[in-house]
Length: 158
Image (cartoon, rainbow, N blue to C red):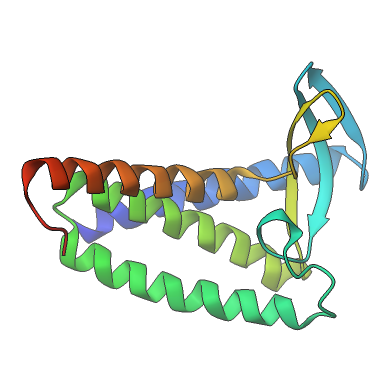
């Protein structure tokens, strides 16, 4: 069962890294392509965490976030081994694991995370993100749904 979920994580990593390589090979830093009225492709580098949190911390954040990603990944792998038969829970964890490792690869390789998906409304721009971030967000959303489903059925996760 664990191999199935690690395969999902590996798929997330591959798609994330391929998309980042594609955008990096076709865009210059800061270059923007307006795709839709509310969506752009833009190449930016994030040295911080979500929403560029701690991006100006002088370099220590690279290693801090790398250590956090490694510890979280070990914990998630342990949870997948224990709960691999719980479909939604394991799917969510697999997506989060793949996203965390996709961004970890960037941090180790470049010292920053490659972001390129950007939504906006008029002059209000949401910070750019990537497929790894999307996988983490979707995984978190699935975890929330699964917790409501379990609560509704009177079962406890764990």
